[in-house]
Image 1 (spheres, one colour):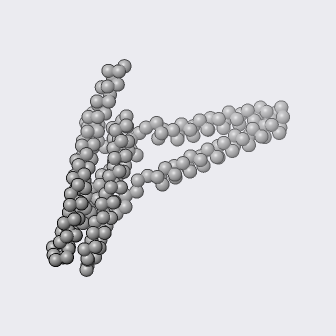
Image 2: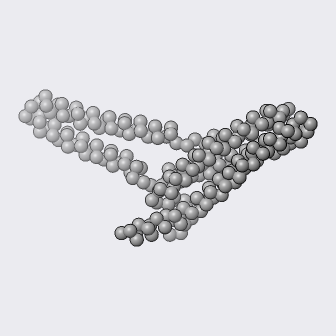
Image 3: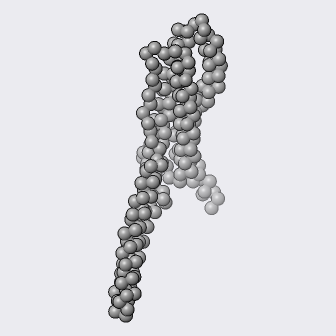
Amino acid sequence: SAESKSLDRLRRALLLQPTLADAHLLMAKIQRSKKQWPEMLSSWEKAATDRTDQVLDLLRGYIVERGQVLTQLHRRIGQTNQRITATPNSKQKKGPNTFRRTLGIFFLLFIASLFLTEVQAGLGALVFLGSFASLVVVPLVMRAQRRKAARQAVMIEPIRVGIPPMPTVPVLMAEARGLNRDIETAERTLKMQQATLSATSISPPDHPAQRNR
């Protein structure tokens, strides 16, 4: 009924609330820093001519802070990806069901080939070859699909904030711009993962709320 569906949606929202709240808080911090970035960049460029050391110190601090934010984002993406892949759904159950169905079809065709061999040897052999081919081809196709899914999984790269020993203002500004681009990319990934978690009908197994049930 509509009432039971609404209660089910409310239950899932309450179970996922801590995970989504942490992600929303992190993205709010990122949005605030995005608004501050143009003003900070303009002030650094104006002061770079006569206060280079001060600007370099400011840029170093900004890069370190951006690196920490990016590290937090990548850690959050990794945790969310583990929860998504660990959540049981119909797609994960599809592989074993397909294999069992294929095995059943193979035995049926094999039995049919035995009966057909007594009537017509060529037709029985053809049916037997078809059943054997289905038993071999389907696992190969399933293996290729699993490899493709593994390649498409989110890969967490190590965060490296490189500050040269003798940096200049343009070099550090380029480093800061690159970190901002990486943060935007990670932020988009986190948003997609949030949408996936919100649409999941079963909460993650390592969630405290589910362990206490």
